[in-house]
Image 1: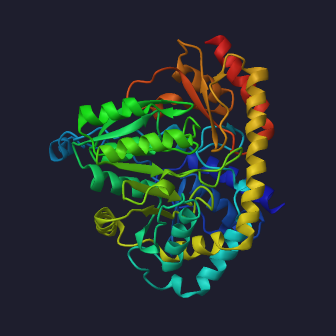
Image 2 (image 1 turned 30 degrees about the vertical axis):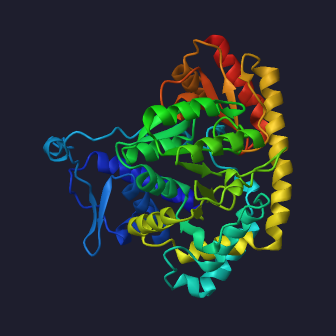
Length: 468
């Protein structure tokens, strides 16, 4: 009743405002209460609605006035062209994977798992405990909280090959998310104007970080089984590069996992060239049919610099990751990270450490494996049934995505627009190539919300391809 009454009052006042001059004063609240036989609360609701619409201006102590129409004056920012000059490097635009999706859209584009796949109960309890502790009011050590350093070191240590010395907690540097870590590593281990070898396709975030640091990317073709070590060795020889960025486990976007033999061969190449392997173990918690096998577990000579994030597996609100490096490189990376962000929020570190050390964390990961398997298999079956022209070179044994090849000649931008118009968000695969794409691909996230809609999404993709 109150809402209906306030709406009627607002409608009557709109008519009055339409014929009034800008700046004209409206009757007072008391006068409107008497005029419309309504309560003061109802009148105030109507005035707030008009204020939200930009029709009136409420001045405390003076009253409510018809808002003057302000003509937008075009701003002249040409002076900034001379002040800024030409950008030294073109940083790629914000990728489709970060696009916010409406509630009624089938979202296959995001790189993050759905909320129901996260340990929400553990995270909420951890925030409550952390807020009561010292972490809420103190500054943590620059390299990270000791308990979190210990956990990251122990996690990698559990996978170490026989005869290989495990990392120590002192080798661990906690950083505010893997993206920050990659930027720091590219600055320290590569440097502006220097070459960095990368798998192609590769993680768009690494491409963005390299552009930001003015690092020259040298693509190494990779497929369902990973890169060719001979081509990698030739690229080291040709470019004089001193680092190779790769995702050996459940690579984003291809889902590839290196075999033990390939990991050994790549490590031999890196060692023979006196170079670094920057290993991004982004999907460590997302194994399905296989467990992650970090290349860092085979090396104690400092050639592998290891990056592991908890942001996707714990919560997007907990941007905490670790870089594990040995030798002088560790000291340089720490100095750079400290100059960039000084330290990582102690509150977030405390939350992360709390979550991953709870008994429920292991239980959660066991359930997560089964949930991801069901979602992945549903999407694979849906594509086979409703989009037969979509080709999967391999079904990934972990990670969050399918890497789908489309027919040659597919107009990817047009396909993405057609899918979005039909209520399905997809990501064109071009965004994952550091150079020209080798074909038409889509990266499809099977860990997103509403897996029951996967058949409808596949049908939409299939229909869009038929019309292409």
